[in-house]
Image 1 (cartoon, rainbow, N blue to C red):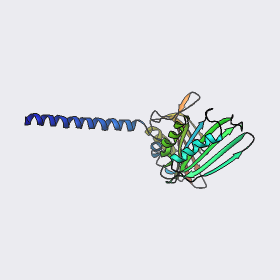
Image 2 (image 1 turned 90 degrees about the vertical axis):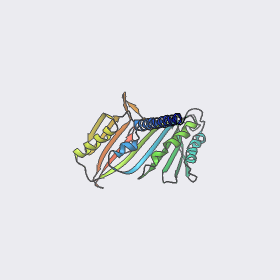
Image 3 (image 1 turned 120 degrees about the horizontal axis):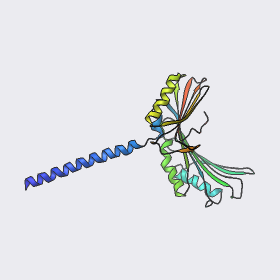
Image 4 (image 1 turned 180 degrees about the vertical axis):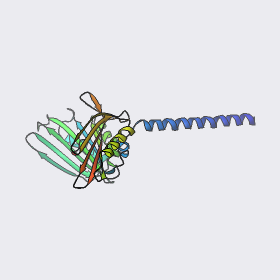
Length: 250
């Protein structure tokens, strides 16, 4: 009886060990199967100065007026626990808009805009944009799920763009720049789609199967973009790493 009990206990322990090992290995595989823009940026070795998350959505006919669009923006602020924020309205002959601005508890600046273009009666094209920016620790990028959740609640599809700006001291040599670009692409398992160089600016677009977002341009998928520029006044080399594209001025 004791021998049988011992065997049963041994089998249970063995099964537990195997099950745990299987779970850990599969969890690691799942975690390493995808990477974020932060992972790609870390490969650069640059110092982070700004991280930004941008959302763009075109609303359908279910949203009748500017107040309906503004309600989505206000819901985003509520989900981010921003109680105090500014709200301003403006209009022209072809545009009405309402802008909201506030800051999260951990210092992420949130800007939102609801707009109707083409017809003040509400029959024009309706848009909602959300911009989250922060310096140093990447807090803006971690708000994606919450903000997307709000858009999803209203049945709105969004285009999302993430970008991290970093710097290096001094004017880097061509060989250093090439090594930086190569390391980011290699670590992201990305293949270069296109690249350009004009004076002191380098731009690279690539596609990585490890990054979920993507954009199709001229029939080619792109989801990882790099830009590098030397700033003579600051004596710093700036790096932008974005997915899917760098949409900030550099």
